[in-house]
Length: 165
Image: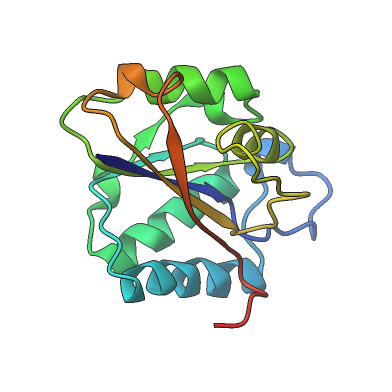
């Protein structure tokens, strides 16, 4: 059994319009939401052994803030260039490439691809929009991530910062 937590980056800053989209940092709300959402996962006793992220500044910082809460070395975050504005197909490819020994993965990326991807996973579960720092959790009855696409996925939860806890 494996678990996957698909996480949209936290709220980014638009204060400097000269920055490229890739280089936009988190704003203050984003800097607060990311550790708060990681704490919610920890309260649910959710384990994560692998962190995978888009290398865009806002996704990278979100992953780092989650790692801090999990006391996981940020040097072990796996950055995958193709997760920056990834399509549904790219998500499947990235997951297929995960090492067999990894069991509980947090994957950080961007909209609109992240919403499209989560809506392809569990029959009967549709999300209009994964908001910033939203988390979509599933379990998969597989031994190897190569079998992810065809495997039945079980919806665990969908949570985001404005959800009451």
